[in-house]
Image (cartoon, rainbow, N blue to C red; front, top):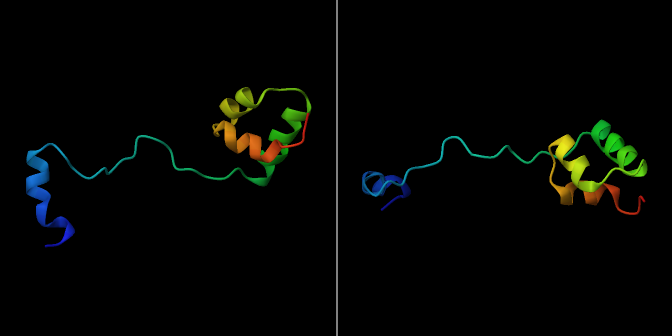
Amino acid sequence: MGICDNSAALREKGLEAVTEPSRPPKTPPTPEEVDAIRTAKANGESVRSIAERFGKHRSTVWRYTKGIR
């Protein structure tokens, strides 16, 4: 029995493959974004506001700004 053999049974239960993910793909920041993120952090902007502005996760911003106060 293959992966797709139960597709009719899964549809009956309301389960189907996700064709459009609900969140954007995780892409690393470009070198220009990294520079802008570091500059913003050096200017005193919070990690949270930087993350929201660039559409990145807080941990991503933190990773690129470690040691910048």
